[in-house]
Length: 189
Length: 189
DNA sequence: GTCTATAGCTCGATAGAC
DNA sequence: GTCTATCGAGCTATAGAC
Image 1: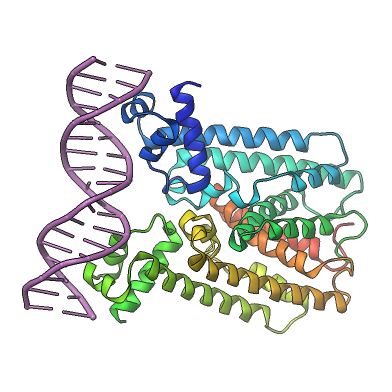
Image 2: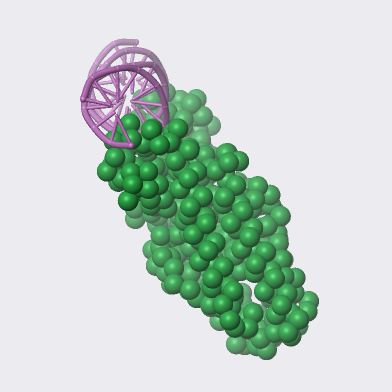
C-alpha cells in the first residue's frame, strides 16, 4: 500500500474514532507510519486529507447499504435486512458521527459527502417504501420520504443510545421497535 | 452571576456547539470573562468543569422533557407533544452529541449523566407506551421498551440528518414518519 | 517522495503577586 | 478570588536536506 493510501486509511480510522477536531496530523502520520513531509507532499493540509478520507468512507458506506437494499426480497424484507445488518454499533456511524463535528459542519466541502450519502440513502429507502405501498405491504397513508427519514434516524439515533449506555442493546431495541411498527398486518393498532 | 456560574454556563454553551474535545479552557475563560487562575480556583481542571456543566445540562433536559411527557393528554398525545416540541434542531441535542466525543465516552464519570438522562427518558416513554396499550391506543404486540428506544433514536437521529443537510426539514420528516406509524387506527397496514 | 528541523501558536495546567 | 506570567507539551504547517 502506498504512503498516500496509508495516510488516507489512517485518517479514516481516526476520523471514525475521534472525529475531525480530535484527529491531529501528527496522529495520522504515526498511524500511517509516515513523516511530516510525506503527508504535506500528498495533501495540502489536514482539511484536504480529511476530504479524501471522508469521500472514501462515504462511498464505501453507500456501496454496502445499496447492496443490502437492492438484494432480492419484499420491501419489508429489504428494510429489515438493512436494519438488522451487522454493524460496529459501539463505534458509531463513520459518516453520521461527522455531523457532530463543528469544523465539518462549518465547511461545505467536508459536509457535502456526508449530506449526499444520507440523502441518497433516504431516496433509496423512500423508493422501497413506496414499492411496499403499491404491493399493499405498507399502509397507503404512509409517506415514503417520511418513513425513510424515520428509518435512517432510528439507525443514527440507535448509535447514540448505544454509545451512551456502553452497550449495543439499545440500538437493537430501537430497531426491533421500528420493525414492529412497520410489520405488515400487526403494527400501530 | 458569579464567576463560577459564568464558567459553568460558558462551558455548557461551548460543549453544545463544539463538544468536549473541541472546547479549550482558554475559550471557556474568554466566554466567561474570567482569567486562568479564576477557573482553576473553582475547578480542578477541564474534566471537573465539564462534569459540572454536563450534569446541569442533563438535569435541565430531563426536567423539560419530563414536563412535556407528564402533561395531561392521552399517551399518543403526550408522545406527539414530546416529538413536536420546539427544538434548536440544527444545534443538535446538548446531551446526545456528547456520545460522539471520544473523551466523554472514555470517562465513566463524564458519560454517567448522559447515560442516566437517556435511560430515564426511555423508562418514562416506555411507561407511556404501556399505558397506551392498556387503553387500546397502541397494539398489544408492541413492546414499550422497544418503542421508547425507537422514539428516542428517531429524535437523536433526526438531529444527525438535519445537521448533515443543514436544514431542520429532515428532523421534522422523521418525526412525522414515526407519528404516522404510531397513529392509532391508521398505521402500518 | 521522504526525511528532519523548526516555526509560531495553542493546549491544559501551575506559580505566585495582589 | 482574581490576576498575569510562565511551563512543557502538542498543534498545524513550512523549510530545506537527501
